[in-house]
Image (cartoon, rainbow, N blue to C red; front, side):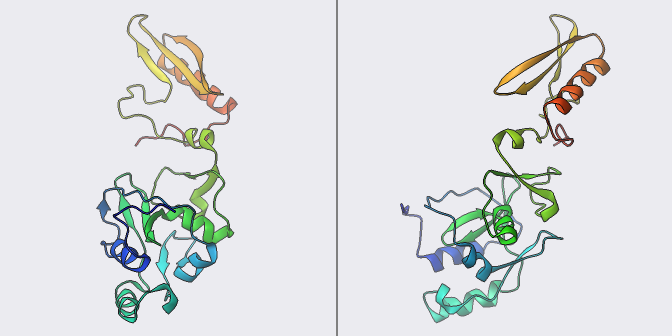
Length: 212
């Protein structure tokens, strides 16, 4: 395990991570860790409500802390409270064992006693909505098939744009590592119809292309 000079002993570093105000926006901090925490350890630390998506700090055993003082201070500040802070990308993160973990990974591990094999996709696009019904384990391709459209999109639909040179709408879609051209259209409605048909054909999620 490679530990940077910013890391502290597990208890004091974790204490600092937890001390940030819940749900405040903070910069993303990366830590180099070899493995995710053991899932039994997560169960000792957290309770998870799958209906609300909220993760709460449990009373933790004395062995998790280096001193009685740290043990007592941590419990007086965090025990029974909602865990985590929002990062600048809108994901909820929780400080544990000297690192920051995405709350949705913890929620998945607590629910299924296994970490996700791929990426956790928030089905409705709300990145801090960690209700179990809103989470699915997908690969990179599947994750990309349920994403918001770019803010500079003027057509209102992913994969449809106006080509000034041809004075027509152009539709396309990404599939199997490449881009498939779906045609030129004088009508925006026709271009959108072609795109939506292709999304259905290639297994895009119905929420793909939502507004940010």
